[in-house]
Image (tube, rainbow, N blue to C red; front, side, top):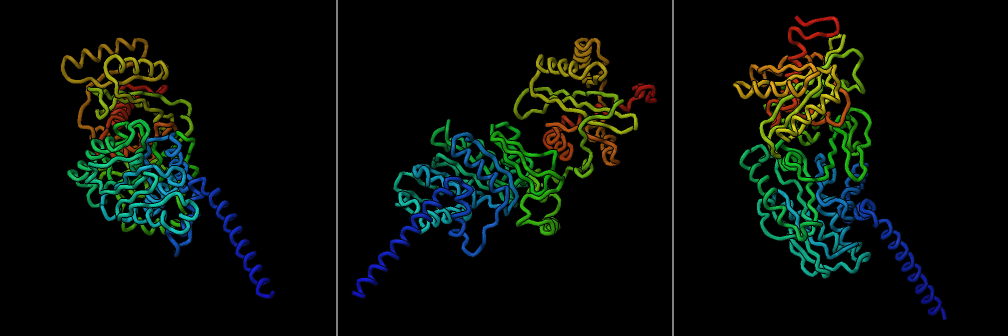
Length: 489
């Protein structure tokens, strides 16, 4: 009798435990319907000795990766600093989460070094074969489990290879995690080989060219790295860019409605793990160049430096003060292509107190009549109080072009003059005013590109906005230019 009572108690205890496990499993599965919930729940499997530390940037990364899963994005570029979970989240947790929803998905994963490809492959393999994962999603069973590749019983697989070997295999997702190393990114030959593979090989590695996705996640290492290629060639990637320290003029906006939530200059990305004292400590051995690229995601070539970014801190204004006299100078490009220089028109003014205001930038890569139409439309937008300044190329053709523009702009004050000196020499007077704190910038969507080009100059790929600014400044400083009742002499 006593034995029967004990057996019944044990049966009930076991049933209670099974019910609890079932309730917990349902709770976990519900929470894991979102990627960020899966990250929190799965963390103990991958990092049992390290407590999970959440930051708002994890939500941002998860939201964008979920948009890829939903088919809303199929080209995604993410630039974040090292140590912010970029590899663990994008190369391990996200594909493991996608398999809970669609185990037939196939992944091609790559990084600059094979050891990192294998590391993340092992991490995902260990996760999907863990007791925690298999008890919740028993339908995901591995039938092949190599070090760099494995497959499941639902035809899904993960194949990994070093980026330099990315010539075979296809996937529904191509995940590119740090295609450059810090050692090779500054080598022209190594970097150009990597960007060539990205342009020529990656687009052919997709199962379905229309719907399969490419996700690139990396820290910036050079102006002409893979991220630079994506942006300069206009390849249609959604760009999630999160610098370690917030720069308001470079606030990130994306198509899914994301806006960087930070509010003040220098606000940290992940203070829970990288507080101010740690960031400042790490900046010292890294140096300004590495900090600009790896922390701030705006690599500055070592040969740049005529303009310094900190000169413009606190110099952004909502609108220009009254009484500014304006000039818009145009720097004209010769050809139309995705890699050619831009035609740029920079509106620069001088205020009554002698300070200068950059009021706006217009750019295009069109040519011929489209450039003429843009210049005319911009003049009408600016109004007749804004003088128009144009360069005059040497030779008869340059004179004819200048006369043509002046004729088209009848009714406006227009000045076409030959340029003298090289680009650096022409930029130096404006640089001096910036260094002295005499230059202000009106807030606009063009701010980030404009400031990046200034601070890369003369080492950056493009110089059109700087040249247009130099031309406008030269015109404002020219003898005979009038500021209200004053005349430059």
